[in-house]
Image 1 (cartoon, helix red, strand yellow):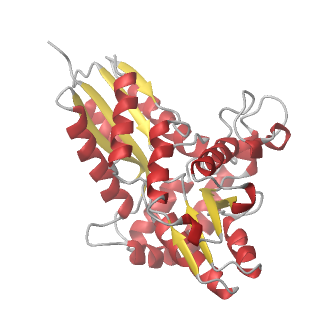
Image 2: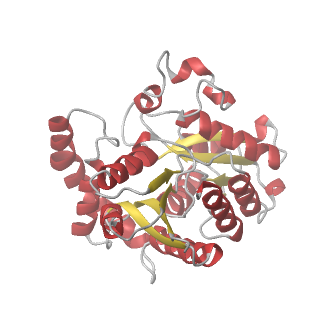
Length: 338
């Protein structure tokens, strides 16, 4: 008898609705994660609960209302579509579900429901191509905290990152090829930002700036988020035959000072000031379109670009549940399965 294996796809999360109370609840959970805001507990609690969330929740709720569709939050329905397609690809030997690190469907609740199911193996796949402690690290830590309490612990496998896998790069190449890149004055690869101290913590000796991370990945920076982002951009640029002057790498969604640079919104502004009229933007850190791609890049960056003389910021659709992405995840899972 062949025992069933379980696969859990995990993304960041979303409020249950665009109502202010649900956005507030989501932000409380998200920003109180010690791997997201890595400062002493009491300071973090005061900062998040008394300053950041009360101020941000009403504003964020308005943005989520713009994002919401008849199917709900895009990150939910894209991940659900991905799960359904992957289930068909993997067949009856695999039980596939998805969860969110924050809010619902809850990572903790899904895993707890699996206790006693007699799965031979559990494969947990954070949907973040480039490793960061605040994303992949947080997911893996919570999963281990849950599973370690089980009486029977099956084989457990984590996929820590997949930025260098062929299917991932090919997937974004295919999405980019839906646009005529030659029609654009510049290409921007925009990744989610992180505090500089997060990437510096990766190194036993020295800092990120000492390891030539803008040149991509080497043996010294295999798990440096900034290095893997640059490596992703370099590999995609090669596929599109872009010269160094044809593209830029930037980091978006900063929450304060001391975040890794250059900033994507400032790059957009400078491109417009220099006379660029059309810019094509990839956001390869997000495998599902979400607030950061649809609203931040698609709407807010468009407004910035127009304000300084530009005409069109074109967002490249993410991988979502594309055939290449589904088949690539299947390949990873099959290779990891015992």
